Amino acid sequence: MVNDTSFAPWNDPGAAALIEFRGVTKRFGEFTAIDTLDLKIYPKEFFALLGPSGCGKTTLMRMLGGFETPTEGTIEIDGQDMARVPPNKRAVNMMFQSYALFPHLTVRDNIAFGLKREGMEAAARKARVDEVMRMVQLGALGSRKPHQISGGQRQRVALARSLAKAPKLLLLDEPLGALDKKLREETQFELMEIQETTGTTFVIVTHDQEEAMTVASRVAVMREGRIVQVDVPERIYEAPNSVYVADFIGDVNLLEGRARQSGSGVVVDVAEGVSLTAEGMAEGAVTYAVRPEKVSISGERPETPNAVRGKVIDIGYLGGSSTYHVELPSGHVVKAATANTRRVAARAFDWEDEVWLGWSGTAGLVLER
Image 1 (cartoon, helix red, strand yellow):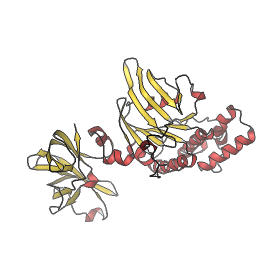
Image 2: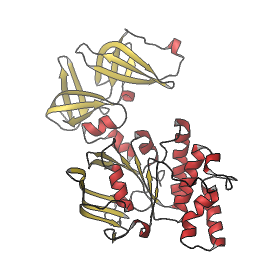
Image 3: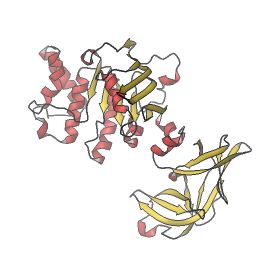
Image 4: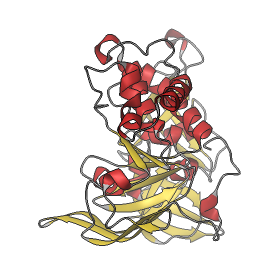
């Protein structure tokens, strides 16, 4: 459902959630892992829990799977309170980062394991295994053992095994962590296609911002056991609600200053001679944020609401793009990202060059500290 812009049940007050957390707190002794959390996740969503290590995202997932119980509050799945429902009685499957495949079983037998334990008749079991193997493109690998296939193929076996029992909810705990970057990116799109095909609700735990932004219909950014923002990926990126979210998601320039109203917009005085404009309303101590890719770099003063001059002190070459670090006379450093449409030898600016940076009034955001 990620690519379907009409899919937005969270905007419908009458839509029923598949998962609902109400006032959920989880403590381990004196440590509070989850702090009074409320959250709704809807059927057919691909939902991402995103945050640094120790923020509580895996604890949240383990409570959904039934491997941990809340200290306070309730968790409902499909309208049923999960308090007394053991993991094996929930319409939930969990795919672990380690994949947890049985090394002595073939690919087919690994996928069929849960179905066999449930007592599914052999012919029906074979048909279901064939179906999910086609879905995850395992082809003719059914007779091989896990050590005879690649890491990406093992990931698909674990996914097929998780999907075989047709769960209402599939939990994925850092499922792509063991894959190299290129394979990881390819598999992200495959996961999206599989989720759309099956209509299963996916909840993924990840610390990889690009992964969450790529696959998810919505992203919950977590910090110290709390959710600080839940929204669609583009709003998480373009309209973060705090300095923490802006800084955690992607690259960003953050400049502290004092805001004052000016007509319908805001002016932020960052330093003597450096005043930056943005939309909205704010006063007092704020942080001004602007993404590097929204900042242009030129040799002449640009015709933009925000224009500052400085010296190139560093250049980060990333292949398809370069990031210029420009120091202003005030000592602030602003980054500008540009696409590398020409070879490095022909680039317009180099170290120590005096340059102008410019960006529109809508590119900047004013965030309260």
